[in-house]
Length: 450
Image: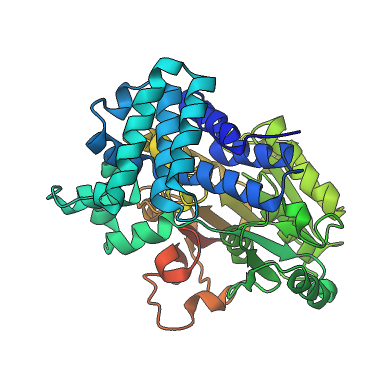
């Protein structure tokens, strides 16, 4: 059966343009649906879909400089076809310009109306003729506006990062770079054989400098193409999520009760439970059955028996959990600005008002979690964002209003303090992709006062 990969891309981008589907879930589902395609086609689908979404502001700026009609005034499917074609012309050197233009016209005729085809063809031919000259920012005097266009990040976010973080361009470059997938090996005894099988399969991967038994792969299509996945020898998990699990200080053989409060999809739960297994107990919960089903799927695949999964709202006090936790972990709901390289649509969907709501929710959750920690126990707070109101200000809220003091991360993740990196605190760390090679992630560790 013949499949038009560009049509798949156009339909996916149209769904993202007009609906509320999250891009990383949609792309995952598409790659699973078309798993029978060869790796080149799947790589093309992934790169063009993600790249078009990630570079939307840049592409619109370029197209608006060429077209007599602003992109925002075009019909959604025409916007999609123009953007995905412009992305190919600007960022994919190996795709012939003539093929891009011809395929765009065919898509226009099939998915929209023939009368729009001359417009699409004219705009793309003009872009092809201009080449690099089309992306000319010499007329944009404001530095932050240029950064917004260059890295396709809304200007209000660029302004916020400039105010809070400094070295904004380096940070934006790191945040918006595409990242591979990370895995964590479950059985150490199998590590050397797995690494050998990955090498023999011709996969490109690097070892984590922070987490033992963790590796990051370049694009491989579906994870089950990595030798050992189907057998359950490793789990897909972002490196930053692994660091949050390590921040709990749980070690092999510990017999502790750990609460993972916002646990889906279950990576941190499985990491912690796996360290203690068969001892200890992880109470893992999230707000809906859909989320807990993801946790259960990971737990069952890994054969862990020391986990209890339940639906529980982290913002609502559960009396049965009061002072049950030797360790409580909160990977809190957040704006996600630290992972916009993986989830490009986050940068376009978040707003100042949305951030204020998130910050209020985070304080409710940590206030609730404080009740679950035993006296002398540990609380770990983490987010996947770079935003002081969601990170440093929540830390201050905890130490000012709750019975906790900061507890150093040096003994539990010493690798984060090696080298010449200066940390503002030893118990609350903001990780940056440009400096640390991780997602934009925040981790803080506290000890409850007796």
